[in-house]
Image (tube, rainbow over the protein chains, first blue to last red):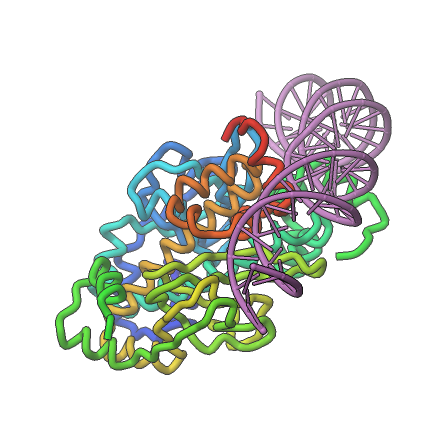
Length: 194
Length: 194
DNA sequence: TGAAAAAGTTAAGATAGGTTAATTGATATT
DNA sequence: AATATCAATTAACCTATCTTAACTTTTTCA
């Protein structure tokens, strides 16, 4: 049932045998999301972590002026969740929706804990993922504090050459922390530095 | 040898017995740092993760204008490392130094891996730490993109009421992403919103 | 296929926060 | 205790980015 991507993601980090694969995949539920549908909405408690099989999700928060700030894009092969909400079992300010028609595997708290019991190696897998993701967000914070918008844009293009092709420009603006209007102006200018 | 703080930090998240405590503490090396001394310097490969026993460390990067951006403060009881460098075994742009005379436990790559073998639960401990830290950095990025300097300052005061007492104001400015001059101006004004 | 919605563009005017530089106050160190 | 270094303040001026708003282009879907 199309577990290939996920099994790849896991076995790239920790070796697992066929039995372990079965134990893991047995816990997964599948969820289809039409474009613009929510996986998780601000104010709700995030019940699941999601692994994207196909399509693309995004997480974002909306500030008091109504401006969206995109925290993460999750194309196929990526995990996504409102971790603040999931970990604290409390509502937080983040929403997750589908940028295009998508399909994802879901795990709730119980599933995850059962997975750790059935296949303790999965603690290691998720530790590695969390550590890498942490390092990425640290870098992104530094970039937000020390680079110009143009530099952040070129960084984005380098790091996500695929996404740049498919995403509406205003999503990229939101991710790098500028308005669509300024992004447009920036791109029309002869592209200095960065 | 003063393992109390660390043992507390671990057993708050995963239950460990006396034997496991011994296995863990056996791997620790202790390092004293005088104020302003480096634990890790930009351009070097970070060899250790550090658990602060006493004092306070900070991690920061310096941008091309020479401005410091503080990524993290680590008072007693906190872990700190240049994760980018530690995980990729590659130099990165982050430095770590002591804000006051400090003492820390250090673990290098081999130590950590040995710890996981000797006490597999430690994968869980570090998974939990990394996940929480990730959630914190995600929130901080959102704050950087959506709040004013004054709002970020009040957030900081709420979240770290102890640090605010002891830290030079310019470090707080650097952490919340503004210049010391602007911080000074901001604090002298009748403190609107936030 | 055509109307409505969404995305992107342009431009004028506004502002949060930065820069520079000079001044004062606080802490180290001899 | 005196001097040198570091931290904080103030103020004038500057700029990257935002806001608003009107317009054009592209996409969606009835």
